[in-house]
Length: 282
Image (cartoon, rainbow, N blue to C red):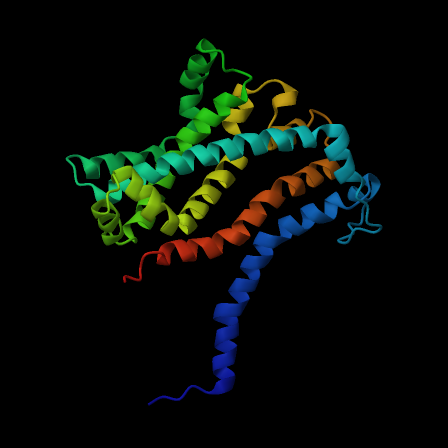
């Protein structure tokens, strides 16, 4: 049996594991670090040569300017309303679509699931013109309802497939017991499946929230009033033809990052809980 020398093993582990991970983290985290540093600098310090990799002195004026003067308080509110309503709608409908795919057998089920998956491959740019004409015809241009409708539709297919996986992990015997006790199908779902499915609901809702929160293309095309801008469109509006306010742009990016970052921190825990929910029978 060949014995690996400790020193050679540590060197091999360092080169093949820790060094690639370190490089990956630097590539991923450095843009976030530089955005935060830029947001905390004075305007003159941002463009100063040589480059200073630390904010000296630290200032929060860019955050105050972005929130109070540029309008990020309004953009944040608009994004929050669209994301929350869309998340609630996606979570509600995905429960029943995911339940149907997990519990029922019907003709064309595999084709239907394939169609749901294939909708993820359709470029959103292809849908802009027909959707614009539809929303213009029903008076939803420059209306947050248009963003809620389109985001709910776009997020539903992926989250329904995700919900199917969560429902499949719940023993069907729970529903059978509820039905024997007198519950109908909907009552059995609400009283037995949904409570056990709670971690999966949180995970699905978080995925939907982040997807809607970061959506730019439809918000940019269907909303022209500045008072209805969402955060991604608001960030785009800070890039002028000849000038860019880098400090305010970086501060707005940090503001936009905070809700998604908080959700992703909790998402990992609920994803694990959702995958294991219903795995214990008894």
